[in-house]
Length: 183
Image (cartoon, rainbow, N blue to C red; front, top):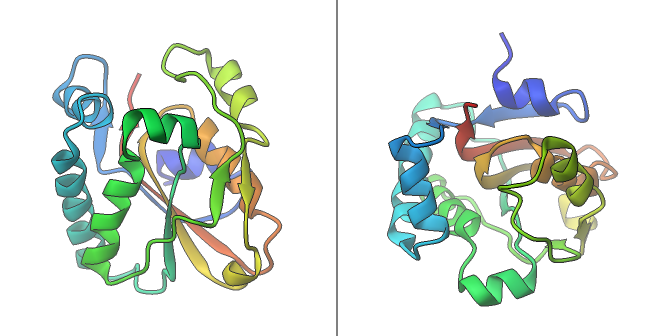
């Protein structure tokens, strides 16, 4: 049985692993925790979540072939106003736990977009297609990379990342998100 990440993204690009240990539902505790991380400035939450995910991945004993973790990038203007990238904080804790490098200077968001939280599914997809660019393809040839995001809702953001990575020869891609929306 395919997990929801494979179902949503696997038709675009073969996903090696898909991980989303928590369910994000309107009004539940995970939504409150993730909002506190993303909008409330509580970066310690991201560190804790990353640790838990890293522990889970290590216990699974099937993630040893991941070469790099890459957090979903924020546009520089959003990064400047928020002060941090929540996906990077989660990713750094996972990378530390797994003793894998976190690469933050290879995938970039080309343009700033308003928050996706109030957009329709179609408009989310539309705003993220061709939204990401890759600075260096050579480093990723033949590598297994794990894209790290905070919450998987429609898959639009991750799809945009996959679109930027799909032209790299022999790349394997896994997707790690802290939570997956359950609407």
